[in-house]
Image (tube, rainbow, N blue to C red; front, top):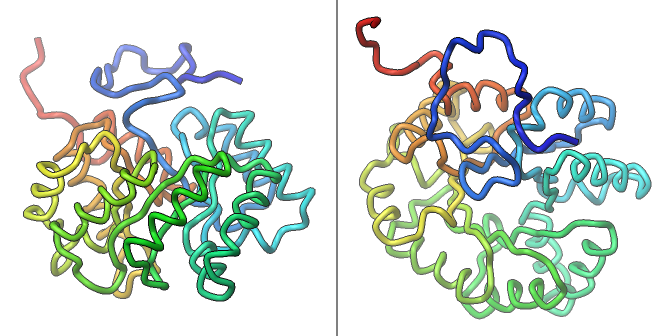
Length: 272
């Protein structure tokens, strides 16, 4: 399976952004796609088109629990065959932790490994975590051989830059590989929160941060809000900004936006 964009492409006379990392596995410009329950055939069809532009695939919330095991194994294997790393969304772990306690974390992580997952997310969207619990979950996952994607921020409250940075550093100190920032935190009255993003840029290594987009799970969200936030992040941090929570049908457009071929292209100058 190819790891990069095919070399034979139409309209080769039209350049795209030279700042965009194209070859997989990418170290920058990661795109995480959400899998809310794609049927295997639909997943295969989407990946035939968009796989070169997808780095991570998130089995959202607790959806991994609903599949027949063989079906889930086929989905995981299909992602891996396209050099896409599947992982489990953090709200599943929140549910396990809330209902069964910290002792349930290691069996949960071991089951994830058995099924073929190599990464999990540790978040507290619905179930608040204190520093001790957050770090215990991350360390246990690392000890079980999993990569950890820590998530910080709230879907319903403004956490503030200082707290987000502190929580992110807690994740990194415990062994998290990357940290996702909740998309709802990145807006202020429907507009990109420029002040917050500036503080996050100054306070964190943004190469290890993945910015989440918002979606219908955030009350009052419209498609234009998702697009405006994505456009702002790419404009502010460049085409190699790490983006999460991209829907399958938005992957192609997101890549076009990264390289200046979407509805907002490069600055227009005089032709030579």
